Each structure stands twice: as C-alpha cells, then as structure tokens.
Amino acid sequence: MPGTDNNSRNQASRELDAVVIGAGFAGLCALYKFRDVMGMDVQVYETGDGVGGTWYWNRYPGARCDSESFYYCFSFDEDLAQEWEWTGKYPEQPEIERYLNHVADRFDLRRNIQLSTRVTHAKFDDATNRWEIRTEHGECVSARYLVTAVGCLSDANLPDIQGRDSFEGESYHTARWPKGGVDFTGKRVGLIGTGSTGIQATPVIAAAAEHLTVFQRTPNFTVPARHAAFAASDQVEIKKNYSQIFKRTRESPAGFPYFPIDRSTHDVSPEERDEILEGLWEEGGFKFLWGGFSDLLLDPAANEIASEFIRNKIRGIVKDPETAELLCPKCHAYGSKRPPIDTDYYTTFNRDNVSLVDIKTVPIESITPSGLRTADAEYELDVLVFATGFDAMTGSLLKIEIEGSGGQRLADTWAEGPRTFLGIQVAGFPNLFTITGPGSPSVLINMPVAIEQHVDWIADCIQHMNETGKSRVEATVTAQDEWVEHVAEVSQYSLMGRGNSWYVGANIPGKPRVVSPYTGGQPLYRERCEAVANAGYEGMQFGS
Ligand code: NA7
Image (cartoon, rainbow, N blue to C red; front, side, top):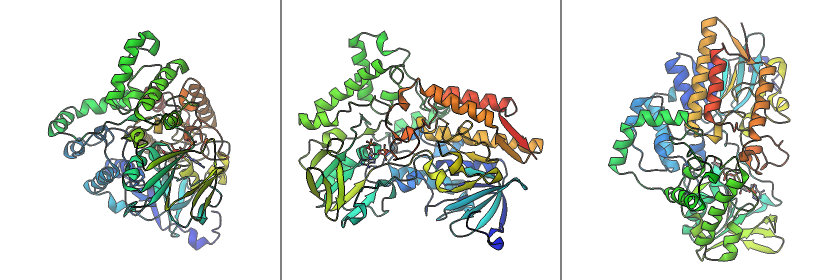
C-alpha cells in the first residue's frame, strides 16, 4: 500500500466477509442484504457523521427529490413500505434523511456502520484473494469482498475560479451545506450554476435574500414539479397498490411506474401533439421526460418540438423578454443534460430582487474579496453559493486509492475513462463490486430501483461462489471490452450522451469524455444481467 511500509500498520485488525463503502441508499441496502439475508459479516464505513449519503450532504435550501416519494424508496421489505408515511409527492431532503435513518434503526443497521470514517486505501492481495482496507484513522481490516456504495454524485465540484479563496464573505458549495442552514436575510447573494441544484435553490434563496444574482453559464430546460401534499386517501391508494407500483418500476425504461406513450411525435397531428405536451407540462415532473413521446430522446427533430414547447413556456412566464431569452436553452437538446424539475424557478426571475447574469457571453474573470468580477461588471456579494455540481460517476471512486490484482491502480486503469463489466465489476480488480458504477444505467433510472437490482445481483453472485467453493471473481477483459463497446454503441442512438454534461464528464476540466451511464434503458440492462447470471456468470472468471 503506497506510503505504508510499516508492517504493523498493515496488519488487519479484523477479518470480514465484506466492506461496504458508503451509508446512503446503496450502502444501507447492501448491508441489510449481505448481513441479514446472506448472514455475512459486514462493516460499512461512511465519511459523514450520519447515514443518508446524497441526502445527508445535500441539505441546501430547496433540496428535494425529483422522483416521487412513494417509489423513491426501498421495495425490499413490504412492511417498511406499508408503515412509512410520505407527506407528499416530492420529498424534501430532511424527509428522505429521516426515512433513511428510520431504515437504519428499523433493521438495526447502525451496529455495523462506522460514521465519520473515510476509506482511503483498498489493496487486493492475490495470495489470499482478500481486500485490505484502510481508513483515514489508520484502521486496517481485511475483507473477501469490497463493495462500493459511494454514490454517483458525491464528489463536489468546486471550480478553480481565479481568486476563489480570497472571498471574504460566506461561501458554500450546495453539497456541503452547513447543518444549521444559512440565514440570507438582508444579504446580497451570488449563485453560480443552473443545474438541478441551482434551479431548486434559486426560488428559496430569492425569497429570503435582499438580492440574488444568478450566474448562468448554460440555461437549462426545467419542467414544473407540481409538488402537493398527500391526502390520507392518496396514502391508502398507494399502499393498496404497492406491489404493482414496484413491479412497474422494475419493468419500465427509467425505473418509474410509467412508460412512454406508444406513439412518436410525428404520429400525431400538431394539435394533438401540443395537447399531449400541455398535459404532460400540467401534470409536471419527470413524466415530461419519461412518460411522453417514444422518440423524445432518440430523434433530434422530435426533441426540438418538445424543446421549443418548453422555450415558449419560459417566454410566457418570464416577463422581461431579454431575461426570458437568456433562460431559453438553444445549444442542447432537452434531456441531453440531466433535466431538472422545479418549483417556481422561472417565475422567480419576475421578482425585483433577482437578476440573471449570462457568464457564457461574459465569463467570470475572478472572485474578489468583496464579490465577483466579470469582464464588464463587479458584483458586491455577502454570500457566494456554488451550485456547481460534482465530479460525477467516477470522482468518489477514484478518490479512494484502489489497487487491484498485481498492484494495478484503478486511477491508472481508468485514465482514459471508466471501463467496467455491466458497471458492477472491473477486470483486474477481483472481488470488487461497484453499486451503480459507470457503465450501468445508474443515474438514468430511479436510483433506489437501480441500487436494489445491483445489490440483488451481487448477492446472487456471492451465493454462487459460496455454493461452488470459489473465493475470487473478476470480469474477463474480453467481456469488459465487449460491454464497454456496447455502452458506447447504444449511446450513439440516444441524445442523452450528446450534451456537455456530467453524463459525459464535460463539466470537469481535463476529464476524458465518455458517456458513463448506460443509455440502453432498464429492461435491456436487466435482461443482460440476468443472462450473464443464468449462464453461470458468463464473462466472469472464478478462482479459489
Ligand atoms: P450540475 O447539473 O452539474 O450543474 C452544475 C451547474 O454549475 C451547471 O449549470 C454548470 O454549468 C455550472 N458550472 C459548473 N462549473 C462552473 C464554472 N466553472 N463556472 C460557471 N458555472 C459552472 O450539478 P447539480 O448539482 O445542479 O446537479 C447534479 C445532479 O444532482 C442533478 O443532475 C441531479 O441528478 C441531482 P454548465 O452547464 O456546465 O455550463
């Protein structure tokens, strides 16, 4: 292990079946499955001082899930689903954090979770077929399996803007928001970034601040969430239908309990088309993306019709025509960057205390002690909010020094972009499983659904090894190459990989441009995973 040549420090203090890194949705699910269902000896390490992962860190104003509460949750335990009461359509961060804490307590998971502990190194030992895992506190344990549950969007991206650290006011990244919150009263606030996060935070900050200036590099298409509290009858209806709802989430292209309509944009008259788009806009949420015309993400002409529909909505909502035009995305297709859904985003630009600055045309020159400077203006600020996203998909994995068979480093192996088999295994890194890793649908489907499928698949693979007396498994290079090629090939058919987005690593300077999530949809992906397992884990090699 690099930098640790002291033998006594390398001595593992515990021998475990599995180490799981992360205690968000994925880590909790994995711990429950491996420990309580499979009877394994498992230790979870979590950097935060609480469970929740994404929903522990992202406590910025307005943080809310874009998937509806009643299916953005675990399906593995019927009683859990029946007993938990979601308060409304789209849960806010505190509600999801409460839910995940409830899960941790309900299944007595905390006794195997060590909080405030970052895993820094993991090294595979070819002689023992075990991982040696080291934490920031110098602990060292040995485990047969290393399972990463680090999240796809967890390595916060704080851009290297000149003078960034010279700012003398308060500054925050949305994914590292203080637990006590931030008081914006009477303050001049600058917000950089108009992704999902910036779009959720803008209306809430605007309502509290003296003035909010939004610095926009790329305008974004957003559709209203239409959040509403649940009535008691909604709860009853959902609970009555839970098994059907969960079944549909496993069958649909994106892990939601609905499907695209059975027609393409060009199959219908312009009048009918507008009526359908209007209905989706009124209903709100991700249905506009995943429950509309079947060719939305495949055909640029069909996409442009939906894109123009949204632009016209923006023009109708935002009173100042110049601001409205600035808010209209014109350089990317709807869905080619992860589309947000919002509550009152566009109307916020009708407020007197909100202004929009186009930093695409006139870029930020520097952050100064008193604010921010562009080529043509100075902005005096008391608070600076970075809603600038994440080094997505690979950032958190590569922050851990992972050494596989023969001492090869994951960071070197992925220097040209991530290479995986099914997004779950990496050739040369035996007994490593990456939950919702790059090359799996992950962020393109409802995450708890993606997570449960991966955890079940990994558990079945381990079960297979137990039954056949194997202690080592890894993807073959051939199978991995074929999968990587397939992921790249299907991405050619989808508009999702064509924007300058974090889907392709375009938001991080110098990051190789690779379409990381699998764009082929959930059914095709699941079919492939099942076929691999049914063929005795074809494409994977086992050893003892
Ligand atoms: P995103 O979607 O990556 O958005 C980040 C925003 O920050 C986006 O508007 C970026 O502009 C902007 N950005 C990033 N770096 C800079 C610099 N250096 N200068 C100016 N503007 C910058 O992150 P979010 O947190 O909003 O959302 C992440 C995911 O969380 C979301 O998709 C959901 O899955 C939940 P750009 O578009 O790159 O021009």
